[in-house]
Length: 460
Image 1 (cartoon, rainbow, N blue to C red):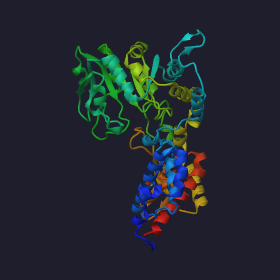
Image 2: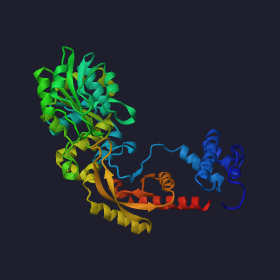
Image 3: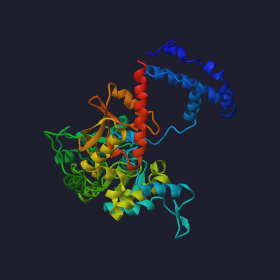
Image 4: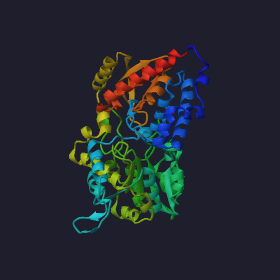
């Protein structure tokens, strides 16, 4: 420990901070209340730094000014994802393609034809902007967009099964992110769940035996965020569609991930696509816009025109509708699929397509630029509740240190923050999920975090 006063006594009281000469100038510019709040934050930050083994600030005026900067800056900021998780739910899921970002900027800058039919010169529908591309790409008769896939499930069941029964396998009563469970979401729709089969084995006959005059539809929920192996069985969508249609009922498939292209060529297991589900006989399919689709957060519902129209007219549609920025980004993303350049233009697919050699080349460049760490073999994950258990081989830059969790925390405090992962007594940074244009910022953040980490070591 360095010589001098006991560390906690080096942290002045808030009143002492407010008496510093610099505070008058700051108060004149920002107001007294904000400066008081910043002084409290600066003092608390210093206490937390001490707990991490770091020294208190030497310039308290600068520390309060930095706290004011934090208080007057947005809390939602860009971050560098070096975790190796491609669709990272906590980091905003799919990064948008450049065309989608430009589309948002164009539409946000002024007025648009969001709900205006330019040809007729009268009010139109906001959903035409994405529906045409969705119909063409999926083969559906119609499509609508809501704010996420949980909202899509709620709308489908509210419009098609209110106060009626929905038959579902016990093995598909999944919990999605944030602790929300499909049965609870479904209950809000007013539909009554009828569970059939067992956790691991369900047959078409189980669904058929559960049918009654109160049955509204058969529901299949794709297990996109976990898998069941071993002694298992479940009917195919084609089999379930046959059973549903024989009873005069629709089949609804909640797909979740929303893949519009085959994942197998990327070295992953095949993920059912929206097109395949519709071709297999599903009358309605819902899926996310910000997972494997690679677009903005949205819940997309595609299927039979008559069923989609019932949802379009439902009162919930007004509450769940999306805004112009979402539609602009979604349509721009879908147009990449229409043009056939999605694998190159959409970041999610571009990351999944990276070869181990390409990833290693970037990791080696980082290592040479830093003169720190070592290269290690590791795995990247798809993430976002997609392709559970599926990984891709990768090469990460490893920073072995005595306290990797502390270094990882230091990385999260840089500007921009860097989110890495701790594994085998080292901080691992995976190039697969770092945008090429972020390399310089990443290297600077690593240098800054290492300096902070080593400064903390020296106080011990």
